Image 1: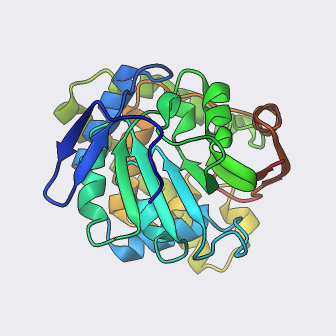
Image 2: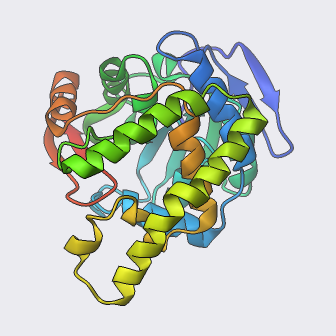
Length: 299
């Protein structure tokens, strides 16, 4: 367990544990934090098959030499804690932070994981000293804060020299064609409207969107896979990444996609520039979906 470098402002008691609460002011969008708290309260349960299936997709670019039993890791924006659950048997200790009420869901999912601690904190006030961690990961989070460049820098600061950071940031569709981009921009207009709905109505609408928008593409992708068509062909179908995912994951991601008020997207070059600015080298991008996943080393 890593010592805090500041005092908590309060504590939150769940059925499983006590969670220290730190300031979540600064580089956050309060409506987005509230939205994610609602999202992860609604989707607070994933089975091991779902966790390991998705985890294999996100962590496939992480060399095994990084994930060791002496590795101390930091999960920035842990949500329900499913990525820390995935890593819990691969590393020594994981500190999870999240600024939202999702920490309550994480406390439940991660019960029994004695090498994980959960704290309520934002990326602008990570309660650990700089140069502390061997590995920092933040998956699908930092594109939801106002200043992503600043957030990336804050995460890298917590790494030891030669430590590694794994990020997943939404891509700007730079490697997609006109039809794909047109469909995205139409869906983004829909997101703008759906994200403003009250919580219960928003979740209902996003469930409908999972059926109406996601599932037709998923079904087409599954059919193409059964026909033994090349992966390069299947990957051209929008949302084909979900072909082997459960409907629970699809519903969750529909809420994440359409229900979140603040969303930013970045090119590979923009992400590279942010990592270099933060003091990273050896930057490696995944060449398969979801885009963009990237790992880098603090020089």
